[in-house]
Length: 310
Ligand code: TXA
Ligand code: MG
Image (cartoon, rainbow, N blue to C red; front, side, top):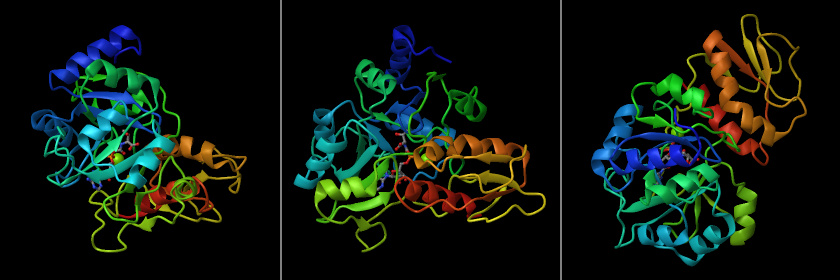
């Protein structure tokens, strides 16, 4: 575990430049980072996560100029970057001729997913490392994402080179928008709201999967999966079930965690993965209270839907 000070950041940057793996906090979730320009370094991410190698990674870069070296910005992509970077938005762009992100990080695609994170530690790390960082969420493939350094240690202790200690903000992954077609498409709901993106674009987002040209290779149906069985939109607890509550629907008890007693979606997003992990450690069945499909609720429900597939 590295401290989040100058010495810790410098040590982490050194490990990354040498091709090692470092987990670090971002404003969304913890990322498992490696040098995005090196097939050898990125191969270690796939190995540590047990990730299917057809699933491409997001390259994290410090700013727009660094992003332009990797991807080709349409006018719409430029608008989105101006509005939401740095922050929890990932843009999928056509690969630029000057790109250095390696084949393995892109899973061989001729497009690249780019994100400029806003988290101060992620920004310090990118500045110190001086290379784009491929960083998927720091969890074994298909399992619940990590939102604390302790989660990362549980899953990867001894199998990665370092973890930078720190706290996330949103608690859910970035929103992914593909700018490969004329109409931008929402590949994954996340920290930046659909409505905010559509307001900037002045048009609706296309849906992932609508139109064969839109590819979202990582949008596997089953993902974020706890070991426990998950029952969504539960109005009450059945015998033997633990409860993942929202807005105080279930009777309080040791086996019930409320994502937000006040019914606040941002608070619920911040608690989602941590509470899922806690309940999953002790229970075989989890009932999840209904969560409104508005604002951050779209991203929360997306994660819960896929966590319930088995
Ligand atoms: O918030 C986040 O985005 C976090 C933090 C660490 O930045 N990262 C993250 O990465 O969630 P990951 O690898 O768990 O999810 C990346 C998603 C995958 O579903 C992948 O399929 C998609 O991005 N993706 C990456 N490159 C793509 C591409 N060229 N075309 C379409 N989808 C792509
Ligand atoms: Mg993930």
